[in-house]
Image (tube, rainbow, N blue to C red; front, side, top):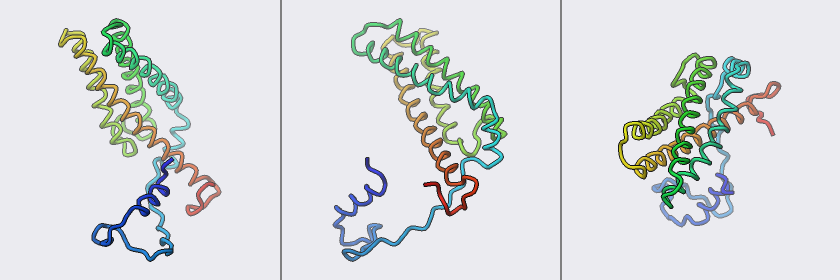
Length: 203
């Protein structure tokens, strides 16, 4: 796995630029150790009050169920959509699967906004998930565009499925945003475990 430390070492090994300062790199004599970097100060994802509201909210459980459900529906639907685009077969199943994926998406967005209101006091665009919410509108827009094309007969079946595929690509990016943000939240909780000081991260 290319962790940041390993990647730094690989870059340093191949970096032969003699103008380190101009290129944004600092030249160090061979064998010299890199000076330790100061810890980066970053605001935790949740305040203690928000974390308590998150843990107490029933919508947290709902989101925990819907998120993997949506991903499972996505995987099945993606396979059916790709099958249709590759072979021209299975249009009905692919269409039903995209509709199902869209319904689950609407459900998780509505319940997610309720969860956001309970935890952060805003239905949308709360500070910790602002950009995730912004990108979610692109995801919803593309899924809705597919439904509109289907209902009003816009485009042929292949064009409709290509829009569904674009919606799925946006969904993958959005899901990755949320996964990275939730991983950051877990790191915050490990770092700020009761009984530890701010400078004493969990091992």
